[in-house]
Image (cartoon, rainbow, N blue to C red; front, side, top):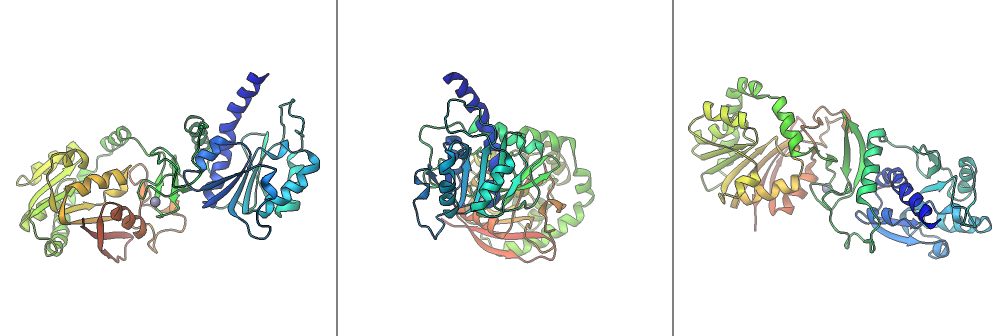
Length: 432
Ligand SMILES: [Zn+2]
């Protein structure tokens, strides 16, 4: 019997987790009261907020007038409460949080748990609304679990595929641990956690929606909009190999050379040395422009074909194929680094910037351009923005996200230009 129960519990838990996480992300609470013994959920939540566990006995404690958490998550616990106590527990729970998301098992099967009662979704809705006010029923994938929450649907909800993905993560990543972290400070950073922002690394994330099969999230700290899971390096290499765009760039090479020349003239006055690097140099226009302005110019690009063309078009420069990480291993440093329309393509912006920082000489200048997420011309629903185009553009920055990322790597913001087009153009100085 015990073995059967264990199996039922372990198959059910990830399902509930996948149902409830999007609701939690939508509220992006800084504190959560967790009602019910859900260790897997607890360890998940603890990555992004303060979690306090409560049981039925302690639910009536606490201040009666002031909610002591942003969100109450009651997870498959209410159906275990004896009917005569249910009203008291619900009244106490309702007082303690601003919002609530409640998962109820409408068909409990553990026959040996004496207090389990079978009630319909409608019965639960009436009962809960006596204490929580108007509730909204979320439509779960499972007929067995009813999910109620105190706020209405906002924005697009995940499709079947994103639920599936969450479920897979729930079952593989979120196994109950013996000592789950309960505060943000003690949470272990986890590169694969879906709550972790790839730019500021500390932020949680709310689900934004899907675009061409990619799930997009928004960081609750720095505001970065990013896809998760990120495409792998192999997928990106394959994508760019099958979508060559160098012929388009080559046709525009003259215009690019002139524009880059004007930019470099302005930036040249702000740096003392002559070493120039263009990261993601494509066919090498900016590198050539820098050489013509008197720099020792180098360009690197991931794409071997771009590097080949660059060498052909502008043979007086140095062009190398590889990642900034590989190049940084060589130990060279540069006084001026160009990184234009690159960072929005990068799956791990934080790791990328580590390498860029190593390539920048003390006091050196970094020039970055990227689409501007918070520009007034960007549609209200960011998914409608043409610049948000996975798998090419997978991390979209506003000023705060960009500054936060740079400051993490000891890069001081010197200037962020205003632009009539939705572009961020910014310079950052290497400080120690
Ligand atoms: Zn962030």
